[in-house]
Image 1 (tube, rainbow, N blue to C red):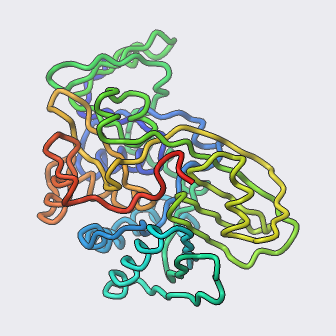
Image 2 (image 1 turned 45 degrees about the vertical axis):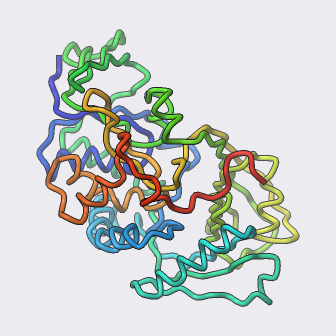
Length: 363
């Protein structure tokens, strides 16, 4: 049996990065439960250096961690893992327009260069903005380099589908496998266990805790090959958590909290009013969004796994700070922020709630 300090399960880039940082920077013995299919499937997350947020404390934390996390990502993934972008952000509804207007004023006092665009150019929107100099992670570059880095650090990497988990009252977890693994991997005991993204929380979280903290969301991803030349490289919409990024060949990768049959309307609204997009690939999956729109971190009680969810686009950029918080060496500002965003019933939604887009099923 392997006896380790921390077990982490998830399918996201920040899950893998967290495992590595806990091992490298905080000398923890870590087991990462992750499916190898993450290397080849359609991307299920947007990794961007900001969220649509109206909370000054969130922007303060983002600003304090961006340089550190960018350097870590570039060191692991190489010079092509992190790129710059100038996202166009378009809202359609009243609440989205109000959120963007509020964010616009917050960002003007920070390091981001944000521009309010003319209503004449985007007459069908309730708000149109461009942020310049944002950073985005190229997942197809980052994933293989992350796995290589984790193995060099000695992080144990296994498929969660090969294990059953037993949760103990003291917060420890035993993972047992009946597969033909090495004898020392047939049982793995971990002092703490972290459900490090929405996919893992949906799979392993207690139903009552998931229902209290999250709303279920159906999310879709597509790859297109358009017939014309696309002018915009990066387009966001806060209501549908919509993100369209162009490929070198002029196609788009699109992710949104919407069914596939609605993508034609969304592409027409946000990308091209006369779309001729040809579908090359698609994926539909279930995920979660926090009920109050704010991040969630920590355990419900000391006997239950940690939950990490609701961090949005910026999740991977916050991972160094999250690793410090898990290891109990967070800065004062980090400690204050994460404590306020606890997963326990001490969470005070009225002081941390943030914009979260349309409710599932809304149109």
